[in-house]
Image 1: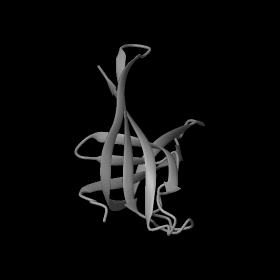
Image 2 (image 1 turned 180 degrees about the vertical axis):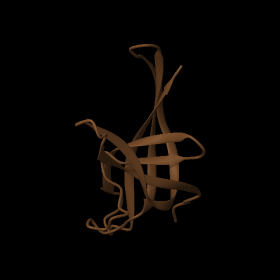
Image 3 (image 1 turned 90 degrees about the vertical axis):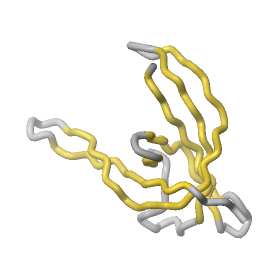
Image 4 (image 1 turned 45 degrees about the vertical axis):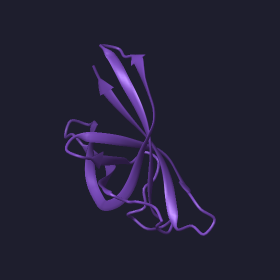
Length: 111
C-alpha cells in the first residue's frame, strides 16, 4: 500500500487577455490530491541572473481516468506546502492495474 501523506494542490495555467492585445498566465486551482512525494535528484545550474537549484521529485497518487478534469497532465503544477511549486513534466500509470499515477516533477529555486 502506498503512503499518500502529502496534500498537493493541482494548478492549471489559464491564458487571459491583458487588455492591451497580449496575454498573461494565471494559475487556477483544479483539485487537491493526497500523494506520496519522493526526492530524486538535486543540482545547481547557472541561471540568467543567479544560480538555480533544480530539484526533481516523483509524486505518486491514486489514478484518475484520462478524461477526468482533476487528472494531472504535463504543463500543470502542484502547490506543495506554503510556496513550493512542482512543475509537472510527465504522467504515467505506475502499476499494471492502473490504480496509481507516477508523476515526474521539477522544482527550481533561485539562489
